Length: 182
Length: 283
Image 1 (cartoon, rainbow over the protein chains, first blue to last red):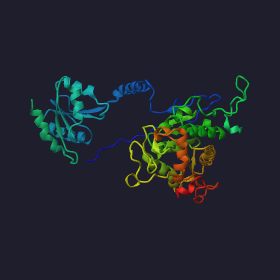
Image 2 (image 1 turned 180 degrees about the vertical axis):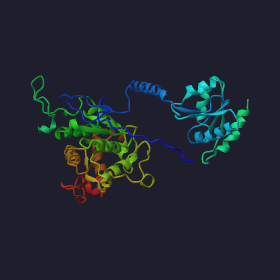
Image 3 (image 1 turned 180 degrees about the horizontal axis):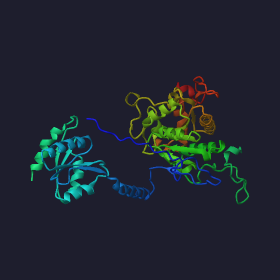
């Protein structure tokens, strides 16, 4: 299977970027006079590390808005397959082929696992959808899926042992099983 | 007193009119260090500060501090500094220097950092001839973490992880870094000094100056190893620790210049270590 790629122009380097923190030598006299700068991650003084952790937490909170995902045929789906990466791509083919057979299944493919698109998934759960997580491991993302939908639904799990690359056909039976389960 | 002992901008007299003949270098911060009594980092820091003053590099320097007690160099030296992950100071310094070849870039590393987890980084940086200077402080032990065995720990030396003493058959021989670095193609200057006596400290400073100058002249990689004491983890008094350097370390780690390229950048011959107290014992 070959994937399309979208080329993009590399960003230009801004020579003034980081003017507030970059290390280029600290002038001790004249117009540019400033204290020496230290870029570090070691904070041993009392309270210093807690302060750093608070800053980091604010950063993690801020990047929650970067959570990204793709949905496919979820609008009237009864069962939403959740899968990411190459398995997400293969699951999409399985969903497409089941749709052609009239089965009400859809796909939710997280593009970012961290931050995890939990709000979008919860919204689908609120709408009454059921979930099947398919993974190329023995169950890792399923924990995030279950946490995201926990107030409204649960998720079934189908695992493919890493080392074998499955085909879309391999997913049809487990998807139909989950769809038939009430 | 030679001028080099004081800061360029130091006042000549104090408030009571007494003549000041000794003060901190201008590129050092006015702050007491956290180092243990008898630790040689204070001396090594000061030599770095004096040289940065004397070579006029203060405003053009980026220091790369590595993990270990010496990471706090950046609290005591008044130049822009970056903290590298354990052992990776030469890799970080490579990035800094290649991004800004006009800056003076040096790393300051201990033996637990440079000779163990950072062995790959230091050897490849030297082999590539990165235009950087390395101050390597060798006290044969992991200081910050509580005195564990280092690659440089001497045979028979007791540490918390070799309480019966280092054994050659079990843990291998102490690694002589200067001898290794001297054999790499990009090294322009490589020497080993010691901080155990005034005479050796003055000689060590000369080596450090050369290690700094091969960078400012664009000749290649500058490396200087400094034998230093760790009285706390050696379980010795500061004086006994100094004596241990003289009696036990220098015979195994001979002092002297191991490589020096000529001023025109052509690679000079490998030099035998200069005669030094006990130097013959290490051969």
